[in-house]
Length: 142
Image (cartoon, rainbow, N blue to C red; front, side):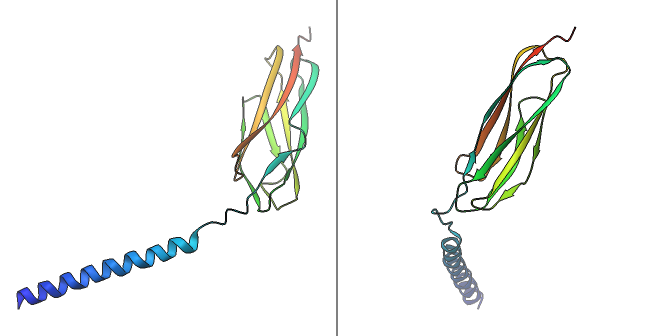
């Protein structure tokens, strides 16, 4: 009797594992993503030169971009090259064809000479990270 129950238990266990594996394969196939749709972050302009500014001056420039893809563009993060630069996004999600902007604010306090600062947008686009750059020649105000 023990042998029979043991065989029945093993048969049930193995059948359950086989059924479970087969149904998970079907689920994975159904979840597969469509490779023909993707978001595409495209900057209208990606560089701006403020020229010469006085040390301590706070300047800003707004960069414009669009979603040139055929799926929603999701902006996951805006990463600055230093704490003196602050990004202000107009929107974190853009539908295909929509335009957005990012204002880059640079505080020149404590900086001198030629400065290059960047903000990188991390998105769901195939090219995950794209940057904009500002330049300023910071001169002493004395």
